[in-house]
Image 1 (cartoon, rainbow, N blue to C red):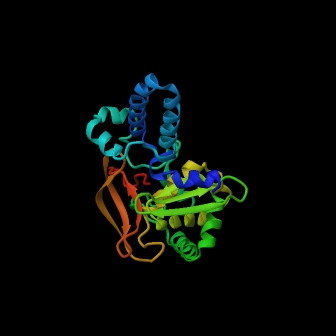
Image 2: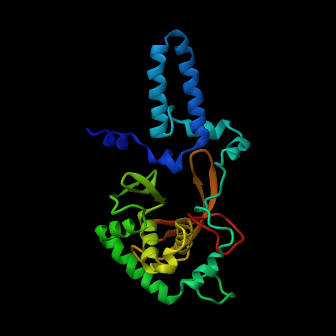
Image 3: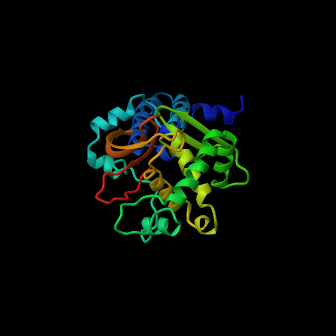
Length: 272
């Protein structure tokens, strides 16, 4: 079996790369050190491979000891978790502070320009967006092609993995690209990329496009894959070391999650 294939099989995306929990990693490294330390005194020759194997396991899977997330959530104080940045709210990748998302999307024809109304998709954008989403949802090859256009690299090999624990994870040539709560959410973002494709949209930074696409996901009134109505609910999402209150946007028919928003007084809070 090729080495890269073995590594991919051992890797645990839910707890590594952008999802790596620093408190869990630190706790596991400390536990590994406590185990290797006495062994080093007795036999350095034996301690080295044990240490290397332990660090490799933590790097690939995010943890060495099963149940670490529960341990850190229970025993580490909130101040420690906050210092590691694990008590952040469920917002998407940060955008430049001077970027007004409402003004941006009004300029792209996504939102109506009436400042007195709540943010809502314009009929023209909504129709074009749903048509594109329907095409992507029904054609896996079209979905892969759309994904390839928004990733770096020359014709990257796109893989999309879906699981109950991780949601949907997309990789390009083996490198993590992004993670969505459902395949429907991925379809929604790619439909946005396709519908708004052009010099002005392409000139935006990747982080800003991701943020705006997440906001659009939270405003759709029909599921992009089954056309069922969307619903908004208050929920609690459990991540590695903590739980977070969110406003969730889901399809009432198929149940797919489209977006999660930080409870905020803003009518247009960033989502993920």
